Length: 335
Image (tube, rainbow, N blue to C red):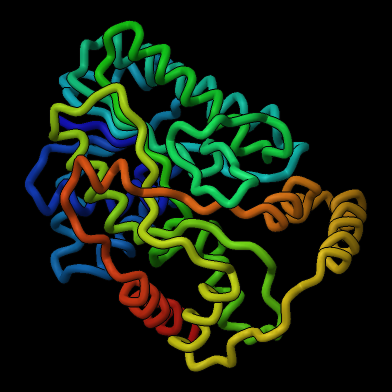
């Protein structure tokens, strides 16, 4: 049986869909029952048999910070996909980020070692791949530093260190570092914000860019790695490097909206950062623009995906196809 943490998120829900379609016995952790409806909704995008597939999952209420619930969840498990994480780029959330992402991952590693599972797949982020400033592409071996890194990336790096510690204790593991994951259903977070932004027809686009990949490619590569003899490796999962201008242009066109044509200047972003900080002080809302955010926009990385392509002979899904598919669903849910 397979255990999935973070099963109610973008990657986790698509992973559960893939596993149930392949008739693999699967157990998934959830924290609150209201999140389960989102998984059913994701399933319905792809099949008319969504409820039957959903009912194949053995759901266990628990938390990666709650050891007893993990001990209950790990019984008779042979593989673990660790997709759970807390995502925030607000420096004031650092303590919570460290607790969930580092400590929670340490708990998963410890429980996997104690239970003697066959393999662990840890879902990290492209943010833990080191930056290059000389025009070279970033690889899995590029040195990483905390300097100018956002708090989410810092705590995910710490989480990776826990997984590598597990490897030293004879835990078979793989780490995946996806770029921006394109997929439907989570419109208020992650890549969903690109669809939400494009739908409003703004004139301005942010500078910089990133690596992008479809969610279906991510879960396919994860399961392929888990069912291989590969272990003690990490892999960049990026299908294509794109500027934010290009990705917003593609999404806007599929929505029948006018693409943005004006780049945001860095002085505008710095004014926005100050206003954003004042908004946080007076309203208690989370920060969305920080110095680290602007640094990342000013110094975008180009990511090299040759390592995963060498070990898994597969063609990446067209990002245009995923964008079209997701845009249609966004329109259907917001019309």
